[in-house]
Length: 336
Picture 1 (cartoon, helix red, strand yellow):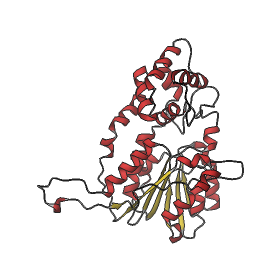
Picture 2 (cartoon, helix red, strand yellow):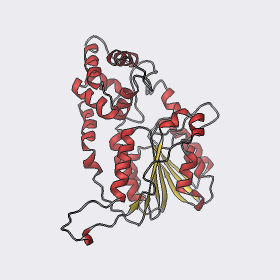
Picture 3 (cartoon, helix red, strand yellow):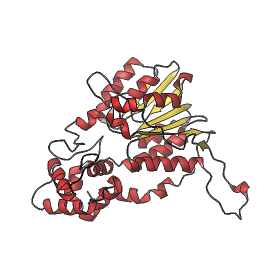
Picture 4 (cartoon, helix red, strand yellow):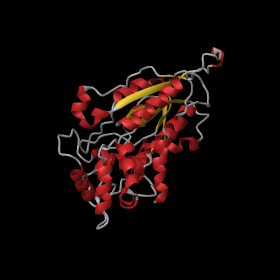
């Protein structure tokens, strides 16, 4: 999921590019992993520095053409794999000197405008929302899951306050016809009170469906865990988020690795496990006014990063337990 925003056919705008480069410092060389390759904005900038190598991943099949063009241009320095970053551990990178790992969790302008993907409420035809080789589409979700199940998805993945009424109206309408993109937008508009919304009235519901269809919660969690293990001492894990749920997950994971857990006052301090990471900044880095003016979709971007303090493949985080209720909601897909 790459948030490189394409405002015209010639220019690409990787979000917070200068800030990412400043954080990971590729000028010193090393191997970097771009977990959301997209159109190659970050990878291209890293490869401008000598003695750098990039391993790039992306779940979107359509990025493979761009990946292959990079491999021709940088045959000894660039490697592309068309997989979800949740499978990062499958690449067996334990012995590589990985200096930095980057995640950009947004969707590109090209992806949002692709009618076949059906990611946007402006799309025509059936609801799709699949990025990569998914087992099911948003159409199957909306037209098959129960009202209560849909309500959970909209509430927890989209923070939609009107989740219940939207779900009820979906159930009513699908009794007479299959719900397509335009139908869902109309249902949402009729279900919500008319007021001045900062974003499109269907934004939260469509966000929830994209997260559910692409299993973004579990993918992010497993991707973060694998990244923390793979990094070497002084390596940087940098993540750009675009909505509150993914930022909440990243923030919690970073804090769980960089802070001592509270222990009983009756236990000796010697039992307290040494932390292996540090989070230099408590607050996220956000785009400048200049970047937002040039690239309005970047306005919600937040960059957080973590530094590994020692070489260890063992990490301790209760992130899976913390967000198990969200993974349980993802598992509703087993009914499809």
